[in-house]
Image 1 (spheres, rainbow, N blue to C red):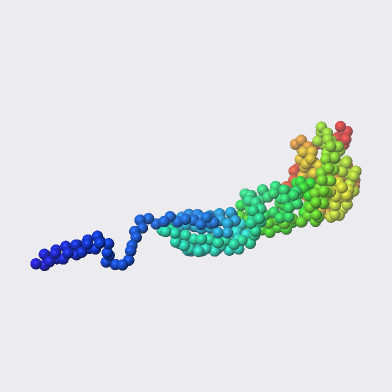
Image 2: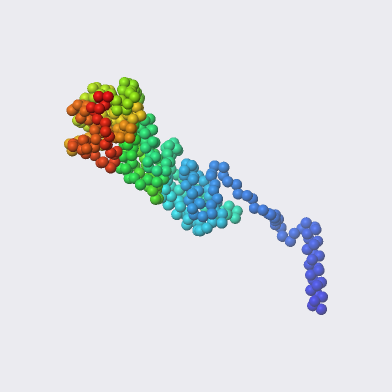
Amino acid sequence: MPTQFLRRMTALLSLVLAVSLLSGCGLYDKEYSVVEQYPVAVNDSNKDSSTVHNYFEMEAAILNLVHQRQEQGSIVFDNYEGDISTDLKNACWGLRTRDAFCVYCVSGIQYEMNHIVSHEGADLTISYTRSPEEMEQIKTISFSTDLTSYAEHAIDSYVDRLVVLIKNCSLDEDGIRELVDSAYEENPVIALAAPMIQVKMFSGSGLQRLVEVEFSYGDDTQDLQQKKQEVIDKIGEITEQSADDFTEKSLLKAVNIITSQCQYRDEYVGNSVYSCLVTKEANSQGLALTLKSICNAMDIPCETVNGFYNQKEHYWNIVQIGSDYYHIDLSQCIQQGTESGFLRSDEEMWNDHRWDTSAYSRCSGPLTYQEVVKN
């Protein structure tokens, strides 16, 4: 019967297969091995590796490599949300134009896709336009106003280049230049004269900016340091000679010392503390910066005013005594006598001086030169 025949044939085939397996002989000449588990991927010890799940994590991983100054790295895509190839291409190109740090120092980001077991991966190669030493010197700050302290330290040390990554910056190159200039004006002793500066700005997305400031001081660093020490010593002498229990008397003593030793020059030259105290010739800016430096040493609040006198650019000071403010114009003290330029009010100064009144403290204190001399 057909059914019995089939049963016999099945039994016969089973017997043949069993004998073949027991005798070590196969139906084929190839050998097979069973792999129960895939080997775990091992990262190259010379590469940084990051696992990412979306575009933002991938972009952050690439940025992290750049900020660590790595030339090579790898990315593993795990349950990635999006098109890996398209996103990777966009990120590598976009970061070079949307991140200020990358704009400044990255010349190219290349990648090569690979397969890591059940995941996709990519090996990245990053090339730079700046040396590792140059990138290491880049400072990172939150706001542009934080740049002032870095600029002051750079000028004080006669550094020729300052590079700062600013996370939130609404200033243009001119605004950065004014900010750096203000660092010198707030503490004129840090340099013999205001350094010449050049500003380059590299923009990222939003308000992110990378700023490169180059300084030129016009002299050998060793000579500058020696001359700076001369200025510091002179300020120390004047401060000691001007010491008094009353702020207004200390100021008057300092003003008398400066005006008796320095000649006024209505020219561009002589615009530094060194000019005033060492070479003993200074214009209005040099005189104002000198009084500012001495006030700093005596802990007297003082501002340097940039305005006009008889329609010509002119500098003088505003000082605080108690809760009141007063003008002091040393060039006026030299030319027309101390009384004409010492402890003046806004109303008295407005006859021949002009300034941005919204940018400076209002001067309306009750003290006068005659009262200070009398007491």
